[in-house]
Length: 135
Image 1 (tube, rainbow, N blue to C red):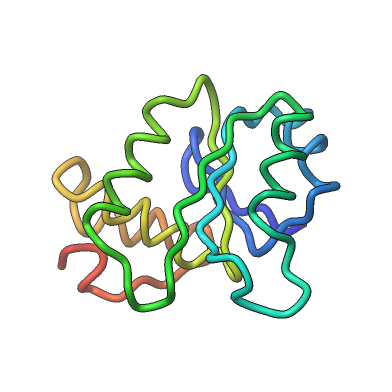
Image 2 (cartoon, rainbow, N blue to C red):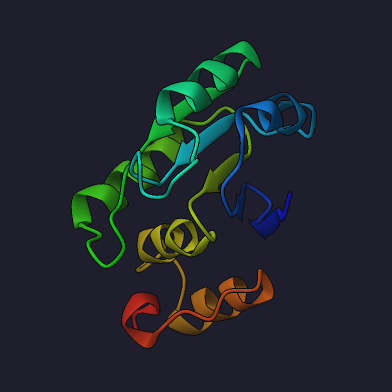
């Protein structure tokens, strides 16, 4: 699994599978945020399958399906609220991790400077456009 630590409270990755959830719980994650819409790609596990595995592993689960290029302020708010409500570190995923880190970046506007947002994302392996970091 390609886990990329964004902050001490958030890591992101490309697509995970239901069998990965127990390992994520063992690593200390407490909440899983799935950013992929169901059936985005052939063979992708369904949100229901990921949710069942998350619950079996004792993890909270949130599904915020985002079609690439169609992120809304409401989805950013949902992401921020799920992170705030988490009882520990959050693990968010999508196809590549980019939408997940973009949600984080947008949720940090006003909390961090555009430079801090861009540098934090870059340290995790994501180059975000200026429009996302607020520059």
